Image (tube, rainbow, N blue to C red; front, side):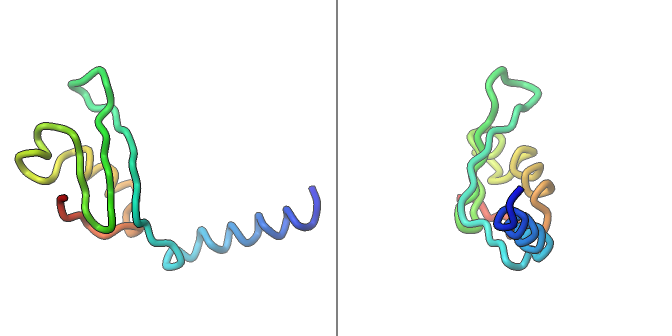
Length: 82
């Protein structure tokens, strides 16, 4: 491995440990629920969450959005619905 790559790996480690450097703006993920064969699509856009499940449509929050918030912990603002 060349010196340039070693330097980039070290820089990536520093960036990943200094979470205040990172701000999520947009994110789109799929998450497999218990009740459907196809996964649900969860989106995060500038602080607002959206999910394609029926529960989210009526409550503006669901297990899918809450799961992604838990995974990202302090990396995103706790969501408001779109």
